[in-house]
Image (cartoon, rainbow, N blue to C red):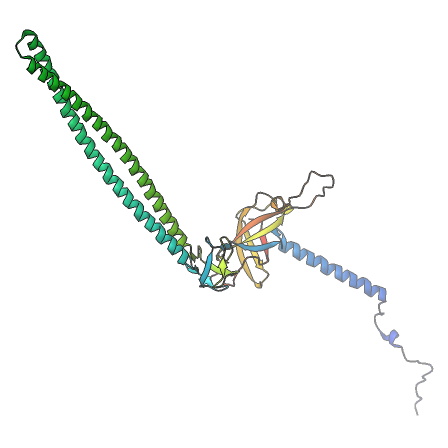
Length: 363
């Protein structure tokens, strides 16, 4: 019979003795974790550097567009409102119609005044024509009277010589003398009549000019009334989308009050870059644009222009640098970035949306 193994002489090995590697202490594990985190951070920094190298970006940017405020040019009650909020309208579309009754009355009054002024002008022109005819006749009469007076004066001169020699009787001499005096008086009368008719022509001409001025003024009043009547219909000056509608039928609107606004489809980006980022930014450089509202889409554009001045320089209360408590602050300069080939069926881009543009300064 074989002998059983002696357990006392051969004790079993412990788990620590049988493990090929010794278990690490807590301090060693912490040190390894820190090293791993630093390596990941360094790798991430390297990736960010490689990705952003040669690019400038900012999150201080937004979409901008023209906003056309629609206001009435006359104060009147609203008859109809033909658009609603966010409706797309074309250029020339009728937006709001005001009550035209008052303006139509003013237009009819102006037209009646014009007709009266034109009648007065026609009357004054007829009078001027008649005065011209009278003046021509009076000049002809004066010329005839002058001829008669000249003949009478010559006849008197001949009779005077004949009377000296006794060739004619005293009666014939007296008759010639009376004829000369009568012809001279007739000439003076005709000349005075010519002067009077000439003065009448001047008066008639002044009346014609005054009537013409009244007609011109009446035409201007008609044009003004027609213009005011046209203001009762408010049309869209540009195509776009209706926003901020603040008008309803029946309300009384005042001149200059904003009724609604139209936002045209053309949009661009205003990006406020730090002044320290502008060293390599140039007009025409390509830009990748991410819109916060559409994170899965990327838009493309280019730098259109750089504002000649920082944003604070054009603020309502610009900073006063010439003071003792001046603190230097990095300024921001607005850049205008224009989209390239926006898809017609793409998502709507509206003013005020936040964007993140990235300018490729390598090109």
